[in-house]
Length: 169
Image (cartoon, rainbow, N blue to C red):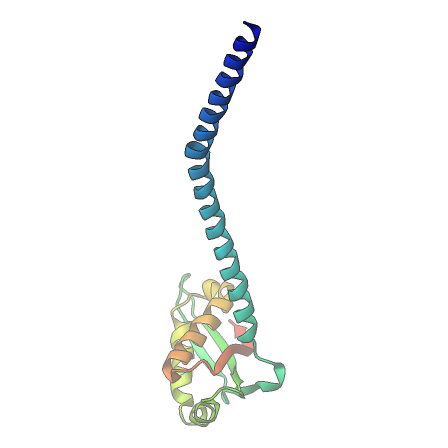
């Protein structure tokens, strides 16, 4: 009797073990697979970010290949009035060019001939600001000028716009 009772208990435990194993396979394995897919996606995104950082290093320009072009005449530009008084800015602008760029020769040759157009872009960039805004947003003005000049010449050869001298009154 003890022997058959022990056999029944062992058989019941084996069946219970089999059922619990089946539950694990059908419940936990799909969840684990979904988690694995999520982890794979996160790893892929991290790899893309690392590759983008490495590609960003390729876009850097060495100091040896940067040349400067000075816009010859300083400009006196009237700013918008916010307090009823007339305000002016006197600005002298320099452009930094990438001499290693494929279109450097054509852009640098055209800068001197189109200097009046560049001065017009500078004038329009500053004249849309008030005295306080122009003083506070010099970097934004530089960025806007850079974008406009890059679009005007259809090039990335122009790297930076710098103010050699800027006086607000």
